[in-house]
Length: 324
Image (cartoon, rainbow, N blue to C red):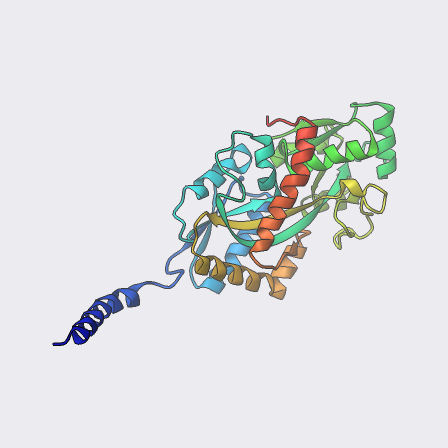
């Protein structure tokens, strides 16, 4: 046997052994996928994650489960995903507060961009500024006038330091040059209870979450924070319309994996998310929650996180905002 024939025989032998192994490599996904939400059930992050998981279950042909790992402003859930195998079977559904974590927690164990694989942008949502109806104000101008008359006599609530609700209130104060006392809570239920009772006078929150209270007259809506009016409350102006565009803020939601997810897997997940978001049923479902789909490439995730990290990180540092 010539040397060339010997080499060819060896190559064929190697390929013969490798072929069965390659043929047995399962296509992604071949089992259930887990989406971790770093917050308790019932909030906007959890609800939108579950709607997405339902659509992905159909699109991927495998069950997509949502697992709540609440605590520490979402850090517990994020750390869980960072330490998970980078195979695409464990993902993180994160809200916009994901971008502000490094500014709030200088010793954070992970970086919101470097330690994750961007998968997809999912949705964005404006917030609504509401007041306790017993407070005799019917417009943002009247609210700000009351705040100027008695600095820190009015209080606004949030579901935690550094959350979108908190930062929206912080920027509104700076823009309008007023002082309103910030009262952070650890859960949305307690916030609404105190607001309904008048112990807290105002807050920013998700439009869909607050809409039932506004419709029943239990809270009064004053404005929305997005760049355009919300179809859920079209009668309410935007802060931009009122000359307070610096306080404009939108929440968003993204899907991430741990760093190192294979590109082919990440791309497949991105395509699946975009396909789910493109369906009329999904757009309609998000609209009922005051949100709209964010369809786009994986790089849009990095752009969103880095943009808010810079903008709101400066607000947090300038205001010397610390976690509870």
